[in-house]
Amino acid sequence: MKKLVFALSVLMLAILVLTACGAKTTTTGAGTGTAGMPDLKGKTITVAVENAYPPFNSIDEATGKGVGWDYDTTIEICKRLNCVPEFKQAAWDGIFPAMQAGEYDMLADGVTFKIGRAWAVDFSIPYTVVAQQLVVNTNDTHSLDDFVADVNLKIGVQIGTTNYIAATEFFPGKQIQTYSDFGAAVLALLAGDIDGVVLDDTAAFGFMQANLGKLKVAGVIKTGDLLSFVFPPNSDLVGPVNAALRAMHDDGTLAHLNSTWNLASPGATELE
Image (cartoon, rainbow, N blue to C red):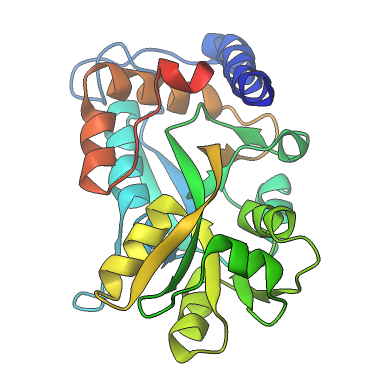
């Protein structure tokens, strides 16, 4: 029931935002975005990313350029809306006050929709659903119950995330080690400074791919979190971005991008 109420809250929020923003946009003509889509008239959109959260965003060591689902999807959205994405690297710590203050037009960083956050910033409709997992070194033999019971087993997570909340709820009484980003937490795990890291299943896959043969999933601790783009309060971008996401869902583009980067595509089952 909680999952139903949560998901319906996301849906109702999206409907209200679309209703409020729909009248502010115009449709494109030939050669400017996609016909029938809101036309942002070539506007530059500043998009905050961490560049430390694969497969959503990271820096390709070979090229020095940002890559990931956030880049590909935001570029596709802007193609449809006739806008230009300008990606800005930003630290997670303090990103919500920055978004609330309008320092960026949009945040693309695998952000979980939370009712409390929705009082401070605006969200798009969700683009994927994730589960929280505990990732350990491949030679680790401890079970999830072991991690709950053994105070000596250390768990790390990125500070200020829903992953941290999930970790404190699943491992009550355990002191959780916090890091500035998940890359630092994973490095600590690989070095043996901690015994496990709690993060989204999509990000877990990304870090395991980047460290082949070194990491594994010990188990799932929470399911059903919906991820969305984030905007400053009362942003006039929410409606256009939602329109583009709906069109990408309907024509299969979103499913293709999600499959390419190992994200799940949300559907009617998330409302059940």
